[in-house]
Amino acid sequence: MSIRNSAFSAAMIALIVLLAFVPLVTNGYQLSLAINIMSYMVLATAWTLFSGPTRYVSLATVAFFGIGAYTVAVLGEELSWPLVLAIAFSIGFALSLIVGLSTLRLSGVYFVIFTFGLAELVRQLVTWYEVNVTRTLGRYIFIDVTHAQIYWQLLALAVIVFISGWLIQRSKLGLALRVIGDDEAVARHVGINTTLAKVVLFAFSASFMTLAGAIMAPRWTYIDPAIAFNPVVSFQVLIMALLGGVHRLYGPVFGVIPLVILFEVLLAKFPNHFSIMVGIAFLLIVYAIPRGIVGLVEGMQFSLHKAKGAKA
Amino acid sequence: MLTEPLLSGITLGGIYALIAMGLTLQYGVARIMNLSYGESLVAACFAALWLFTAVSVNPLIGLLVIVPLAALINWLIYQVLLMPLVRRAPSRDALEVDSILATFGLLFVAQGLMFAIFGGNYFSYNFLSIPVQIFGATISASRLLALAFAVIIGLALYIGLTRTRAGTAIRAVAVDPVSALLVAIDVRATTAFAYALGGALVAAGGVLVSMFLTFNASLGVVFTMKALIVVIMGGVGNLLGCLVAGMILGLTETFVATYVDPGLTLAATYIIFILVLLLRPQGLFGARRS
Image 1: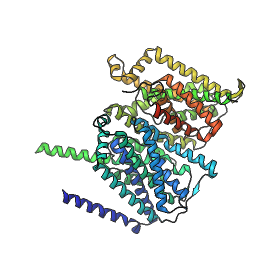
Image 2 (image 1 turned 135 degrees about the vertical axis):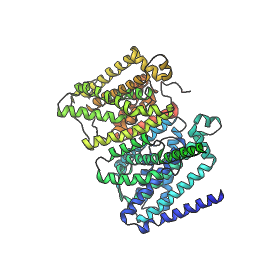
Image 3 (image 1 turned 180 degrees about the horizontal axis):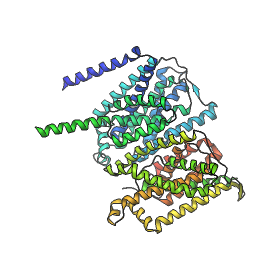
Image 4 (image 1 turned 90 degrees about the vertical axis):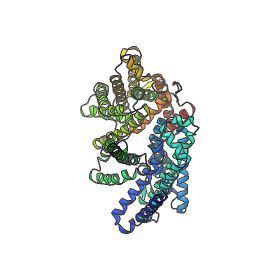
């Protein structure tokens, strides 16, 4: 078992090192695609971190992502970069605590509704603030950072998200969350503080999304509320996670890579019908593969295993 | 001075109540948490606009075309798209999650279609925008007419649900679909009917709203949000709750828009929502769920 574990760790480290070399061997277009993949990888995995085990569908991904981007737009040129990231993380954490504490002690549907409108609320508030207080709608982001550096930061963040997810799964919190996902009433009866467990996990998941937004912000050079809080992002993250499979932390990986490429092609070929296409793709996934690619493969393995067992 | 925002708040509140009644039917009876609900409303706005400008049909006559059409479309959506989910869902919670996902996808398809046809611009048309004086306040005739129609439709729905056999069947399914089956109610047909009725109500709301509000293709999300908040504030499945909660929301929004800032109405909506969640999550008229 321990040999298998160390072999697995070695393979993972090798994979990370290999991924770190991507900016050195790719051209501009490929690198930008790699950044997109890595960014959605962080978002979809962070989404799965919370929504996978608890089965609470969060529709607010872009609210946090956009807040991260805006933090950079406002503070990016004034403070040092690590400090900006720390502030973005804290804002995401604080907002997710508010959302979590007001909804997560109730049934899941309140949470869904709250997150459904959250991005629109934050967008309107930022717009209101910019129009009335700063009197400009839209900001320029001039931060000296190369695309390779953005990629490396996202890679580091992705590694952190995976490691946290892995640690959480092995902890008491992870066990608590799995019980909650199976049956929340049972979880309460065995003495799990379900609200606390859910709120803590949601806060971490949301803060990672905020960080991803902050790291991605310099890529835009110009942002306004409509760009930063584009609801299609929440939607895409949800699709990618579902296609991959949300009952495993690594599931979204299998959704992110094909869908980022597919969306890239769709956006180039059908810019005016993009949202229709994405919507149809999503419906197909919900109906045809509700447990995602990972669930599909596991199901096939299971039936294969059963067939073997029957023969023997 | 105070009567003007009061009057427009009441008209807005009446429309919100009507819209929320449709959602409470879809969610309370059919157990479908419909996130594309606002898109039906916006689609009805566009339909009314098209009828008025292209074929010069007055929106009140337009109701006669748009509402039955919306009912039919929603019935089809339920039978074709949602029925498979209802069949495969092992529990009510599982259906809720599945329906959230499916209607979320539907939202983007519907929004994308409207964007492709009408673009992202704001639209409005001039119908009966004659100033009328009531209690010393000025209000446009179209707003008053919209309120009157909302009241008539809401009342008709209330009477229909409480005084007819079909209405009683709908209420029975809302309370307990399994027991409803035992007293020979065709649950599947009743749920589909309730879902279609919900779609018809939101379409009626859309036509009425289009007479006095400017709208664009991406407005749906905000209306869905407001309808959801009204439904929760009133208590799921409670028509009287919809009325009271709709009024509270309409009045708050109008007063915030008049005295604070029009850009903060959604924030006000959210503050109400948080208060409801903290103080009375089962709704003003809802019984505490065991």
